Image (cartoon, rainbow, N blue to C red; front, top):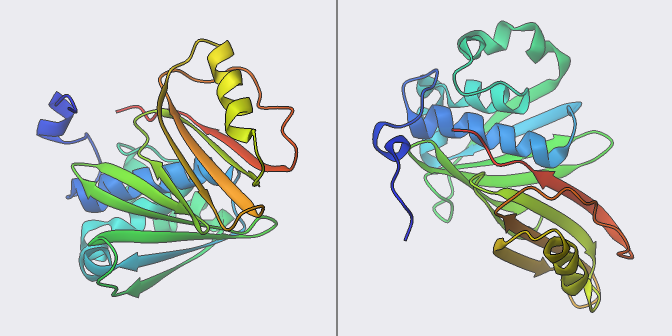
Length: 218
């Protein structure tokens, strides 16, 4: 059972009127930035349902952009982010969509440049978020844990090799999510850890992508 904190009761300290639409949007942008790994040349924010309908009034568009640019939820620059010099460093745009299959507060953050990537996530209330997909791979990333993300060629023994590295450091695995496009094709692994990993993941053939996402500070 999840332990309830004072954060769950009073919601986060933030700039903006809504924890779901503003703080959640900033956190989704921050996590997407960490996954992508560097400042993108271009980003498209595709907002769905409630995010699309009321997002502008609640600052969702500002929050998403501010997060991708690395601003914290309580940064006063967020309210004027569109005129901020930081926003001039990238090409960004917004699209507004309806899809009953998606969460009411759903967004796709689509990065373009040398590395192309789509990150799909939801703002689930009280400033809490969940990233559910990276490209077409299912993940489960909330920012509540230090999280290791790998994309690699599907082959026997990868989970064992990665878990051995984690075990060697005495780190406990909170959860592990795996997905693959097809047997022997591309696969992904999303591992939530109780402590940050200090040893690099190595010795794995055909490892295409490796990111460690730090636990988000409340």
